[in-house]
Length: 185
Image (cartoon, rainbow, N blue to C red; front, side, top):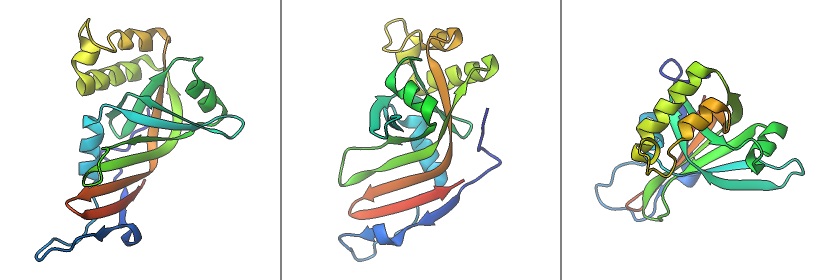
C-alpha cells in the first residue's frame, strides 16, 4: 500500500502569481503558503470529493465520491462496471478535488496522482477503518447512507483505489487574502 507519511514530506511552493491580498489592510499578515499539515487536516475532514478521470476517447468525466485520507494516500471506491472504473482501467491518472463553495473563505484542495486498485485484505481493513473514522455513522450505523460499504470492499463488489499524491494544490481564501500553494511529492 503506497504511503507518503510520515517519512516523505512534500516540497511546498507559494505561487505568487496567483496569491495576493485583494484588500490590503494595515497590519495584515504577509501572504504565505498553506502548511501541508493544514491541508492534510482538511482532507480528513472533507465529506465530498470530485473525481476527475479521462474516458478512453479523451473526454473528461467528473463525478462526486466519498474518499478517506489514510497514511498519506487518498482512497475512494466505485463499482467495477461504473464509468470511472472503466476510465481508470484505461488510464489511472486522475485528480480528486475538495473544498468550499465560497469566494471569501476556505481552502480548495486538488490531489493529482495515479489510481491503483487495492485488493490486499489487510490494506482493505485499514481503508475501511479510515472510512469509518472519517464518515462515522454514515458508514457504521445501519441507517447510514453508506452502511455496508466495508462488506462491499471485502467482497469485491466495490473496487477500492489508492491515489498517492504526486502533486497537490491548495487554493486558500481568507478575508480577502488569496493563496495558491503547490506541494510536490
